[in-house]
Length: 359
Ligand SMILES: [Zn+2]
Ligand SMILES: [Zn+2]
Image (cartoon, rainbow, N blue to C red; front, side, top):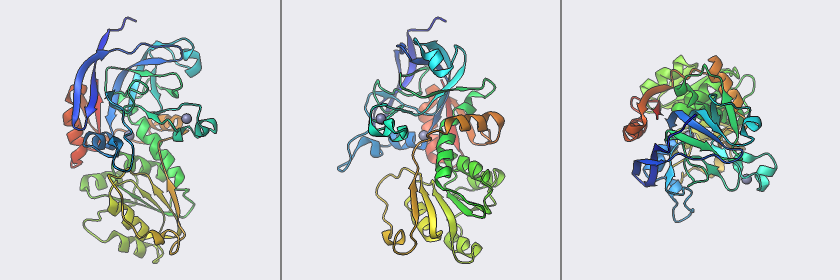
């Protein structure tokens, strides 16, 4: 297969400074894989990064992003080159569809050595690290040596393949909720992640599955995708409603996927004593809550959820066999050149759910 020398890519230069550029097509070294990107999603974190979120650092935290870097960490690509040993290592052949887990582990730190690679100390996530983990908003993309790559069945449509990453994150978050038989589960935030979590939580057969969101079109979708109830906190007192539904005790499991402070505060109010609160969102800044609720009042289990460790094979299976409906979540596909419009669409949320770019 003859490859071009250069390709189009969206390169991050700074806050609100993303440029479509002609850059070299990466070359593959041993154990590396080059894919032609077939589809790549716009994540809420891409939108936040564009507008200058925490990854750029603050007085309290070091910057995480290393620029210039090609954006994007949700993708599926077709294998076009394999470095020595990569075919055997990953079970990949030229022409296969493939994804790579969003974090490229270092395999050296204490977390990697204990199998907790998603907490890798170096933490190279595609789209954030210059040269070490360049992202997918490009025609071609390299999976570096050390990446965790998976084959995707050829029948999966590219725009659905771009949903593997968020679905893997959703599976991990739901597992962190440790849903038990008879549980009342509330998922707050019906963005792409929340809608994936909802469909995964449905597989656990909770007693009652409640979705919360401020957008009516997303609540409608939540009902169609398996929510028993879909409530709008802008229109009713959802804390009171959940308490009424549970004899005044509160929900057993609350999964926070709103990215808004109110989503945390209402969750701490509507969860029962000894309940499990899963925090998935990335918040724009500090969130102020009555911290005593966690210990003194309710003795909660507060479980963080980050990335989708060990969940990719299941995510691929769920998308390939239709267990999770990707079709309803991917609402917009745009060519890569229109990335600015895609960021706007994902940002406004009023009509879009998942926006996907096609390089
Ligand atoms: Zn993401
Ligand atoms: Zn590591």
